[in-house]
Length: 110
Image (cartoon, rainbow, N blue to C red; front, side, top):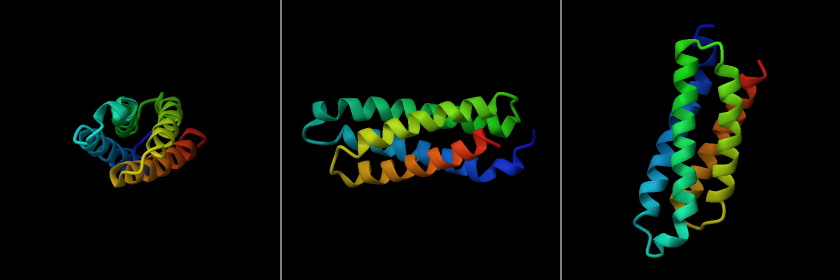
C-alpha cells in the first residue's frame, strides 16, 4: 500500500490534529476552563489518533484501514464534544473533525 492514493485523508488527519491542538490550547485560556476539561481531553485524544492514522497511511501500514476506522470514531466523538461549546475554536475543531471522519471512513472502506 502506497500513501499517494490516500493523500486527501492524510491531509485531513494532519489538519484535524492541528485544529484539535489549537482547540485544546484555546480551551485552557477560557475563563471557565474547568467546564472545558472534557473538550480538552477529547481534543488531545483526537489529535493523537489523527497523527497515528496519518503516519500509518504514510508508512503504507497494512493496518491503516483499521486505524482510520478508529480515527473516524474519535473524530466524531471530538466533534460532538466541541459542538457543545460556543467558542469559535471549538466550532472550527468540530468542522475539521467532521471532515477528517468522512475522509477516514472512505479510506477505511476502500
